Amino acid sequence: MRFEGILKSWNEDKGFGFLTPAQGGQDIFVHISALPKGTKMPTVGQAFTFEIELKPEGKKRAVKVAFAVRGAPPARLNARAPRRRNPITAVAGMLVVAVIAALIYGKFNGRGHPASPPTQQVPATEHAQPAQTAPQPATAHQSYRCDGRTHCSQMTSCAEAKFFLDNCPGVQMDGNGDGTPCERQWCSSIFSP
Image (cartoon, rainbow, N blue to C red; front, side, top):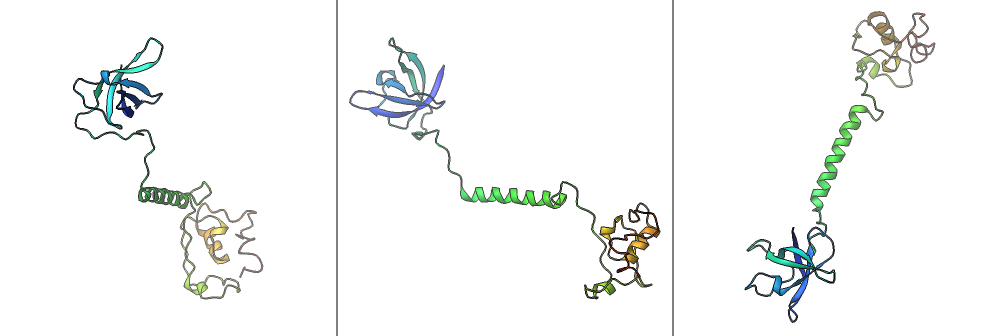
C-alpha cells in the first residue's frame, strides 16, 4: 500500500531522514538508497509517495520512494496545520447568520408562534386626542371593517369592539355572553360611551 508524505528532516552527511505521513502517525525513516536512482539530495518539505516495510528489529522504514508530483512545489512541512481563516470571510459568515436569525425571529415573534396579523390603524380623529382621555364612541364618519381581528387586545376602542361583535363572524370578545364586548379592556364604565 502506498502512502503520501513530506520530508520532515534530512541528514546530508549520513544520507537519511524522516518522512511525515499525510495520513498522520509516526515519522518514517527513509534512506537515500530508497529514493529513485539519479536523485539529487532531497529537500525538506518535498512531497513523496512510498511504501512501508518493517526492518528485522521491528522498526518501520520507507521503501520504493517516488516524487509525489513532478514539477510540483515542495509541500509545507506541517501539512496538517489548520488553515487561517480570512477575517473578512468570518465576518461575512457571521452577518449571514445574524440576518437569518433576525428573519426567523421576525416571523415567529420570538415566541414560537407566527406573528399576529397587523392591527387596523387608529382613525385620525382618535389619533389626535391626548392619550389620557378615554376613546370617544364611533361617529358616522368612522368606518370599521372585518379584517380578521377576533380578540379584545386587537381593538382600539369600545365602539370598534362593538362593531366587530355585531358584524364580524368568529370574534371572541364577549366571554360572558351579555352582549357587551371587551368589558375588561374597552367597554368598562371608564371607556364605554
